[in-house]
Image 1: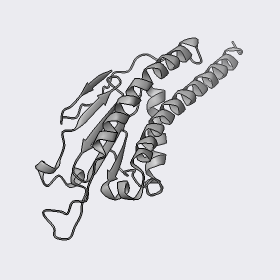
Image 2: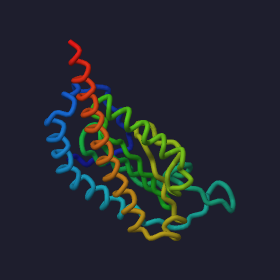
Image 3: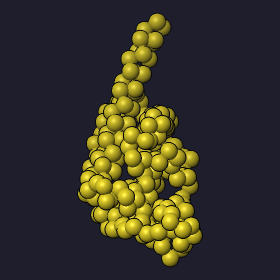
Image 4: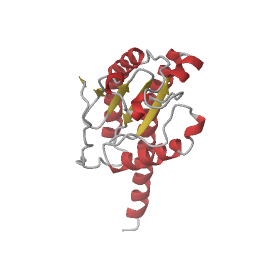
Length: 201
């Protein structure tokens, strides 16, 4: 696992490995291996988020009586922290951008092939259409990432910090598991359809 800190955003890779045989054992072994590497990745994200969520109320230096998330408006560089990128691999990473009164968390979900790419796109679109029900979910992700969360000092005042961290970590666990299970189901169904089709020849 690679952990780096820089402000530049990496472009997602366009290269995709060939599709495995539908429903094959390689799918299941690959899923098991991915699960084994998930825990250290999530632990690193949790520790970084806990450190970043030291937020306080801060009035805007530009507009009187306004309080805006500095990580979004970016009007004062001295109020921004160094962005941190935590990478599980070249396609799966988390960008944590901190400031004095807000934190933005952007997640790039694994998309090893075209099936995972389609499943991820549909799932994230479904989530962002219902952003108002999740409070900290942004309607539009940061460029280069699949989904983004915005946590402000008002959220940390109204909710427990450790619960906010748990929510983000739980989301990452579930989306990884959900996409893997949906992919296995789609591949298994494709194998059955192919077998039925080939019976005619």
